[in-house]
Amino acid sequence: MNYIPNIISGLRILLIPVFTYFLINNHFISALYLFIIMGASDAIDGILARYLNCESVLGAYLDATADKIMINAAFYILYTINVLPLYIFIVVLVRDLIILAGIFFNYKKSDKVPMNPIFISKLNTFMQILLVIYCILFLNEMVNLTYIQDIINAILFTTIFSALEYVYNYKKILTFKNIRYTSEI
Image (spheres, rainbow, N blue to C red):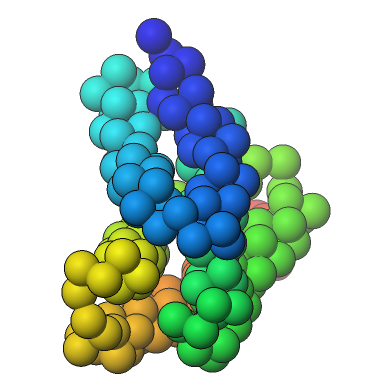
């Protein structure tokens, strides 16, 4: 039972090419259903991991990797089909690269790299999933783009704020690890 959350995250990664195929080939209703399933699986794997008391480093990395690939692929395709502006894709991608660089740099400096997403980052991911769903609903002619700029602005705020908080936390961790405590004067 302890492996179920990791399987869910792994399946989400495997579904990303199917989702992108649907989106690129104008199968918008299939893309919508699949993305809703993928977005729900993001919450389900975390809830199951906590409920089954089987949170793991592998699971944390699988979940984060699935989120980053899923969102960036969706944003890029939505940009290429002129639904999202380029700047939102770039801001989200840069933040994810900052997080990746911080993890890599921290890994080089220590044996154990904690993967603890901050609250604003979880909110950011939720907002990004909502934006993709909203855009696909638009492509299915179920909504108009009246509120898209409001959602984009909220994502810009949470993306920039979480990037700054990650940089601050990485700097704090690295600074703390460089301090040596001795009894010598």
